[in-house]
Image 1 (spheres, rainbow, N blue to C red):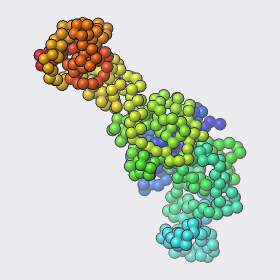
Image 2 (image 1 turned 60 degrees about the vertical axis):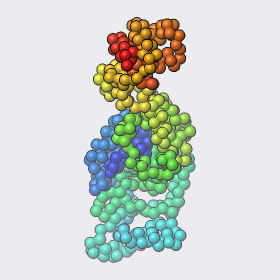
Image 3 (image 1 turned 90 degrees about the vertical axis):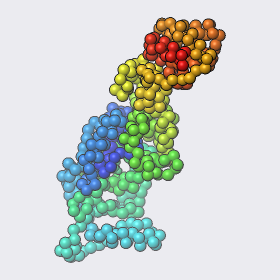
Length: 454
Ligand code: GLU
């Protein structure tokens, strides 16, 4: 059976780093076995869903290189949810409820005040037909709840958390449909996971209690003829719930919740760096600057995921970013380099970069103008000697410094630093052996002569 995973964002905002991580893991899980990774837009909430966010989600996934093998939209599948709803209704697994939000909230508070779990009391199930008819005659439309079976044990083998068990009696019958007919998350998601052939549901641990409810929903749908793809023996897909992301400071931070692809791009973070970090953060595998996705995919293993929250650290991301940039090939960055910068230029400058955008600053050392440095009399004479000595070859830097060492007796810093300063206007920077050929003979001589007369 082809592994099929899905990333199911609600288009009510931009993707943040936590969503990106979930998308990545689903993508890797699918790609590891040549499977399919679907993008499912969970847009049943018409009021909060926005088309601009759908577009932003697609653009972010494209920037990350996590291209889906298919896209589905819940708003185009309402008839499917209706059919499942009718089937569950016929099976006696959904029931109408008439409480207002205020009533429910009040009951919750009373229960919590008594130190009891705020489980829905199934008041609506106790209504007689006459009472229901009265409510409807008063114009009160019901919302709909899924009836959990308290006698049916809830258990699944979680890919990350191990064996999970829930007592249905400790859960509220979830509201699955609002009075206006619109859908809440729970049923459409289960229907889609079945009909889209989802074999693995990998999501954040904030969904564990939803899964508990959905396990019974899958079973009920299965009994009603909706069959899941996982395997014939199980009515539901395989589940795995990953620990949530935390900021370095150890709290679930608001900042992380708003940190998305745009912010990373603006800071010069490469998608490959983000991928390398998020692929392994929170796992027992070492986070390393691995730019090769195939290697990351190969080592991806749910068994390495820990139960503790994964800590996201910007400094770690920046370190990985730098190391990844130092590995990037010219073809991967050429569109983002300053005009005229060629492959040799990229190779010379790459080791000095923390971001690709910095290439422009370093390339200025080749194209000029460079900063002027004031030299003392002795160094000015040294520069004059250097200008005379400069001889062009395949490796002009080593030819020049070897000859100057011989002629002047200088070595180490006094030999190299004034030359670097005269040729680049800086005390540090890219390897001079790589840079000098790019500066070129005439310009190099002119810079040395200018220094000699400074
Ligand atoms: N739309 C849901 C969310 O963003 C999807 C959860 C799931 O993966 O089932 O939380």
